[in-house]
Length: 381
Picture 1: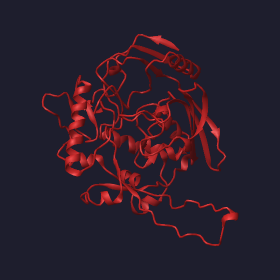
Picture 2: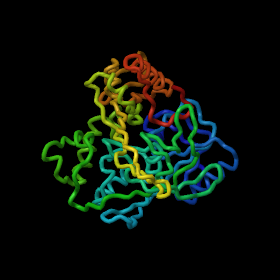
Picture 3: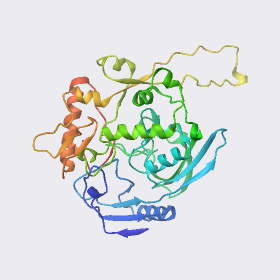
């Protein structure tokens, strides 16, 4: 590891806020990262790790602790125990979109709809990143991580990460602490090996985004085409980083799409976009032979939760694209109502004020409190 002169977080985060921390370390290899973490933990310092800085909202005051930059990289292809699939093990600091590009180039399907998402691979399982109906939990096999409490390195199956909608046991939620304080060192994914043939696009949300319907929705499409379309869509929404476009000075979607019970969704206007969060209809019931009495209780139909569009809620609460509070340098993207943008040297306080205003308007209009998606460091909402 290398100690460097601390760099202002405004220069290292896509939202462009944050002062220089007290101390900053660079780790370019996994052993360096392990050493940096163990040394920091042994001294009882406040700390956080920084990857691409695309999902971080840092406050205006200097962070009183250590920031460890994860600069590791590398992709290793591995065999899969499942026919027609392949695995990749990727270092935590590897660029996420670089990984997606690699999988598409090599005909590996499963994360192509997540093209263009900024940030690093190690951050992806922490908030279970997803886009257009694809989520990393669908392909994640395991992660290698190091626990703060013990300093031990272990391989943890995906099933033990508590993956949910934009969350996991590793995520630092505003107002709380992670259920498991640990840092991911590498990630292993299991992907469909479809080669150049492509595959049929599954999922209503992704089909809709790609404009596939009718017979076209039942035909295989090349992974390269899916990636190109998704990158174009994200660029049109200002969700691809571009130094010449102030709409991209953001943390992506600042608010999560709301997951609500079906009964709550029914109370929203019918034109509000929504997608069912499908329950597991193939769950297996295991009855020990010694306890089997010849009767199996009938299964109960489970109503699914519903994901509703936060962007629609914001716009229909009177917050239009390009909205700004008076005399503020923070504003809603002119292209996408979910992105809060730094329009030019905005402070974290200005962005937080805008976020709170949007939350209040949506809650007043629809009774739902939108939750922030980025990790907040020394910022209150």
